[in-house]
Length: 593
Image (cartoon, rainbow, N blue to C red):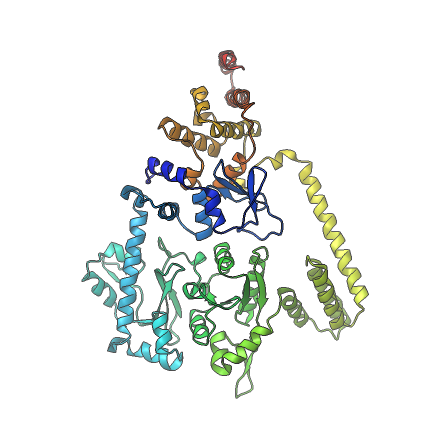
């Protein structure tokens, strides 16, 4: 571990997970734990638990769990060292220099950020030089972006040159390897490098903390590719980037707007909609949803109205379903050209042709997802034909039956019935029939799960599934006992990581034992950086279960006996193996076996 264990132990001793979580979640003490609504998924009844003595959180709904570092990693999309740094600052402590690197990763991150800042300044400066005149003209005339908003978003120009940036940054002491790591340069065949971006409008990508983490760029003609982004680097991860979030997070408006294009974002901000963001050409991910939920409780989807945009809207609605965010959908109308052709519009087009006030009107008329989907369904069918009408009603009933609110089911069921010209009663009956069928199917699935209790004892993640369930359950219990009192490790001298049937539980045991042997207080919370999110979720679920101090000694002996017994049985293949196993059982008699 790059961060010294002694420092982590001291920091963990000062940090109270209840205080950390309370900064984001409203908690109420109930029994031994604190409870609140989970910040990682939508729920109406609190299933998010914080155990203060064990310094862990666990959600019984979505399964997320871990210590204070993991909580910050999830909430703020931080790495483990970044979470340690943030908590250390909170407690007035400084992370030792050897712990800041995380094997060089943190130093690399800081260097890439510095290179990006230098590159952003270079591109911005080029905009006012002859080399950037074409880009400056494109910004001013074709995109109609004012100097104020060009500066606000740091727009710049990449010269039509193979090495303008790499030469300029080389003169400032940047080496080739650094420029390649930052995604600012591309390796040539002869061992040299050349600029990644050439003859393009440059848009710095700035994260919520105000750091330039990369760039997106656009050509000014029909050259392909039209848009070109920084490649994936140590800090540029498209799946978690929301362009414009650095400004949108400060908006006074009651919602956020999600659009598709970076230029759309700038145009919208210039028109007064400073609550607008965009993904980097990717579908909406869990990371995006988490950020959106952090900065707003309502989201208006305003994606393109072509086939790809409609599909992206449907996917976004699905991704946002359990987020706790109220979703509205704004469909931009198609624009009629002077030749009478209907063409699709994006927010940039619409604002330029009709202005901000017209867009405000569209915002006011944005629809809930159910209404939007129902309207799309209606457009798929010819309701003048009986066969098409029947298909529409069946599809509409399926959609309405999936709504959780009885009020919504009645409103949209009646609306579909009116569109097809049938009675509200008939539509209501079909919806209820489908709901009964769905309920029956759900009960059947639950019954099958209930008839397989062993399955319920397995980890959620398939990659973590136990091969030996009996041993693994004992291994789980043993972890709870040693976390209750580390002195129990003295009775486990002969038990090693290799005796565990579950690699994850064995590794957790070995790390905790190493902490104890080094004179530290064993704590899973301080090991958040040693496990993947899925592993941390599972370990938190294990240790949050109660373990009585009165029965801990006997439980420890029982768990140890089961683990060693199952380990011995797994190795019996010959008569000699059996004899050795019997001798081992006799030896374990002294431990109560």
